[in-house]
Image (cartoon, rainbow over all chains, first blue to last red; front, side, top):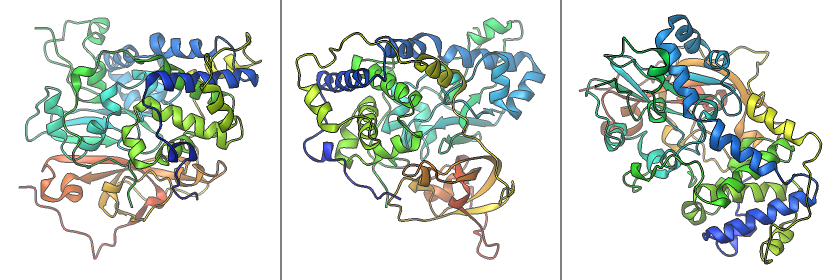
Length: 209
Length: 237
């Protein structure tokens, strides 16, 4: 196995922090790949469009809402989240093996990846900046209640908080409890209550006032 | 030995800037480009797996790693692996980025099959999960200890959870062993397990009485806890 060693490109001189320099480097790589016959003019735009406008937290919200209204679906979701999500047309890269962690009255889950930024892309899109930050990654495993409080979420002392560190290839998301007072809402209205942060576990879905 | 990326439990990073979140996926043109180049290179077969790119980021010198923005690390890892895997020449990239318009090229059509390969990668992902001829070594409910290593290579066992006692809560599929495949794409696969640790096992009395950390461990990260040396139930007062 390789030992840690410095990349020669960074050992001499720092990696440039200037976005213009970074863009020049990225553009240089793109141009060289095109000249090598490995990229087309539209390749980058096609990929970016998918993750900017097609793949995002709305998919996860639909999955949660379905689980709230359909007990059989909920059971299938907890048994094999990737297969259940596929029923709703949700799946793909970074979600090949997903697991939904179901909150209970006295159990709350929160997701992190302390080693990098593993995240279930098909149900949530690409992660927000704070999820990838060393602040979240370093602290939520050691002081989850302090971190949740910064998001405005305070749970009873007796609630068990389970922090899930995504260290292998399974990707996790939280199946939150259905909020009280939502008995009259249909599936679409329920999905609107479910935010990205609810599926990471730093917020709870709120019912109508 | 712990590497700079292994931040779980590290002090000093301060509060989370929750207000900085504006919902946008990318905030600068280089960010989306770094992401798309990584994805396209994966679809082109220029990268073998995610662990070799993770390992590339982990090989950044610590001061550089800390100061790099998130997508900057992606760009650095993409560049390192494109060079190390023999796709692009390091000096050619550095020469090109100095030119007035580094992105200027003749019109280029996507190579045959690339768009389909990308769509397929995004919609179906990679077939990583597998089975092994031998059964899982550890059962649900079994108490296990994590190994302690002076790891000088890529691994997915965080430092905060080394040498700790936990309990297996789920048997998970076999995946390629990151420690091996980060530098050898043909490395072996191992069963994985979801392991539960009480916070006080990890953080001593500073751990919350009702807090738990779970992580996914490859089989070789674990050994069965010797019943005679098992620590007694920790105080929960």
